[in-house]
Length: 394
Image 1 (cartoon, rainbow, N blue to C red):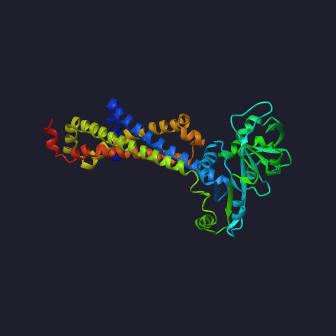
Image 2 (image 1 turned 45 degrees about the vertical axis):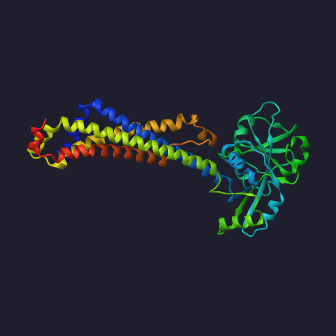
Image 3 (image 1 turned 60 degrees about the vertical axis):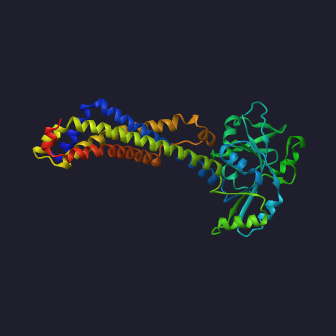
């Protein structure tokens, strides 16, 4: 039998011999791995949701009133209903910039009231189908709107998809299409033509006044520098709110950084406790088996053989603890994430993917490394003890 298999079989028998004590260490490793796995999956889910939402808008630069940057983030990322306005002249001036390849704007209004049933919330958004590149790419079927027709987001469609005619601001409108799920605030939108705004009673428009718009989406030409274009926009109008793909969701990103710091401290403390438990466990093992090791050394076993046996035991214990821990981590992110406000606000989730499997592997390896670090000191002490001394000492 190969020597490596002999060492492995001896290590496995030793683990099974003291199963309860080793299960305690495996449990400690599993809790550490579960926390690390959950933290990495949580961070990945939030970041991916923010990045995906900004990509799905199709814009390089987003312009809003200066006081509305936070509100725009809440609508884009969290589907929170918001209304804010600025002068349409801002859009006209920005479209004169040579670096702009396409631009469109939207007007945010009130929520939809259905003729026979209702939904929780829905942002009414007036768009120009002729210039729009944010909404129409997500429409299933024709993206043309006629008088009195609207598109609805995927969330709204789940409630009103079977209704041919609903009421918008007291007037009947025809639902002619719906968006695929985007994972952004567009999913809760009801999209009407800009040309239909003048048909809405003035008292139904709230704070909106003719000549106002809510948000501007800009695409820049290929090769143009976003930072340079942003600088030009600020020169034109320093009193507007500017967001780029990287800055959308800044408040959420900052919150996430705080959460990561909390996770880091908790994981560091858990790692130290796991190291101490591994040290204690393997110190007890070394003391109990000191005479046994002395005899093995006396009949020809080398120091590396002793180290292989004990470190193999540490690997067995930590590996099985790591497997349990990754299962717990995935369970937490998939089935208990609804209790975390940040995930539910963003509708973020973690699906099984190569990235999540890589996170699981990384977490298991980290748990195994922590266990090995804790076990190393007592194992080295025992391996380098002289055989006669090991046999004589109790």
